[in-house]
Image (cartoon, rainbow, N blue to C red; front, side, top):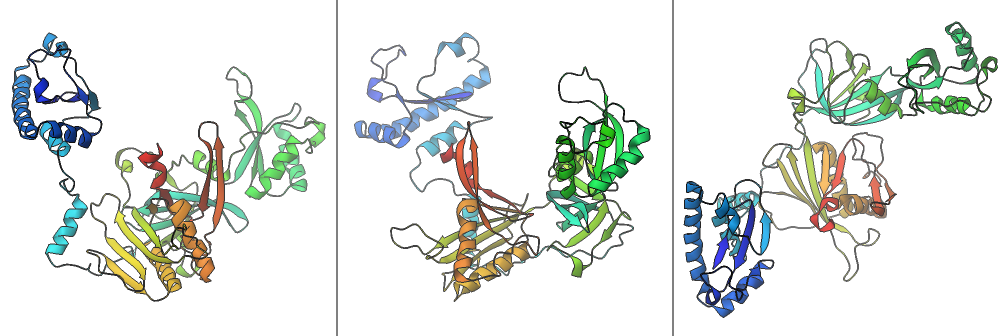
Length: 502
């Protein structure tokens, strides 16, 4: 008998026919937990040649009984608790089909339901459509618009600190709901730190104190006295006076901070000679996002008439649109309502194949890259809009994919780099791209002398390089990884999330 119980905790037991009894308490009853399905079924079939047919008959009878039992609510109360399940318990979520599970349990190799991708390839093969039509890589063109009437609303994906002129600024990279790529330069935000106000220093001294600081330190914009609560020690939620020292360049704030902490700043001998504690040692970009209430992957709006568009010949990135706006005019939206939606992010998944030597793991200095396979899709779309393979020499046709063949490996790498720049992915994924694929491609380009290869981030002047990274903690131990600086494109290796690593 095979029992499949349609309950929140699924119990599956195989019992040889010869040992079935009318009493469930028979001490001779052998119950075999189903842990290895194939081994269990093969062992039973060896003992009982006609068992499989009889199993199916009993399954159908028991399924009918279960439906009747559920309809009449006869398994509630004492009856439900009187029978304890045996064997291996499989947790289930939501509704579960015992018939579907039984078919999957007894399916032979090759009988599993094909995936939607496999079905699509079969349809292409049957229709005679062996090769894909020419695929469009580039993003849709931005129509002309008037900056006085057009709001620029985008979901920011990445950000970094920069300098515009001699002042600190931030760059936010994102995508609009139409799929246009945007680089937004945010200016006007000045970094700052806090210092406790020493006894004897009043608001009347601020003008002279500011002049004193400017004589010894660069970038001093202003000094204010503000009321704040100290996080050091217990103050009973009492607000205390602090000096807010504002600088216009992040390069100068560290020197000002050390001047207070080392006791070098001694205005009228009011500050402690052994130094004063400073507060809010926060990175410039993080400070800007906190003060402007900008969240990661949040939506931002540059209101019409508040921003300026950077001309094409002055753009520093490959984004379709570059704008500049003052931080006071930039609008940040909380992640709620329509701002919970995702922009149509472009997701590239790729994998490389190497011609390794027998018995030796591929090395970029010696072993060539012979193929790079790519799939690009938009977030939320069920079907990718780009499927292609870049290959050295010839390659057999692949159903639904474009094939780009090159005689020279270096030329193939250049064309793949051009493909990345043109298709402009927001997210790049692969099985182990961080520790293998990307470092291998970059090191292979160095071995071949392809100097224009490592430039496929969104910043035109940024060169991609491989660096070693070491992470160590008591919980996770020490991990060594490779890091590639692909600015403004988020990269993820699925290897780190594979169940085999858990």
